[in-house]
Length: 99
Image 1 (cartoon, rainbow, N blue to C red):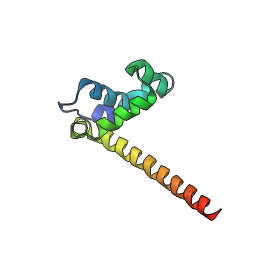
Image 2: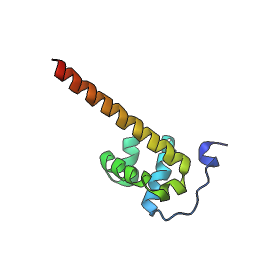
Image 3: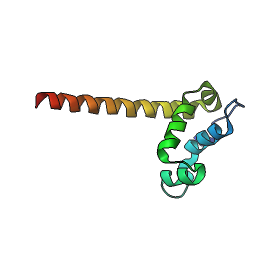
Image 4: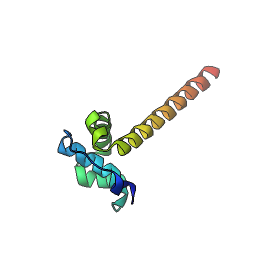
């Protein structure tokens, strides 16, 4: 049984669009083409706006209740990207200070 099949989704107070966003994140690799193209086609928003909406959704307890494994993975990925950016910025500032 795959991760998507084994995850049980409990009824939640999430708005329908938030549910669609989480479902899309779980299954987007099944879509043909690039993720940005699928975002545009399915949600009719830019990729930047989609990721703003996604980040707002995964910060809610209702999202955690809806799909705890997915939200945990998305939060972990976001934290990794944030930390990587912080390290890059710090290294850049340190390089400028030594020049």
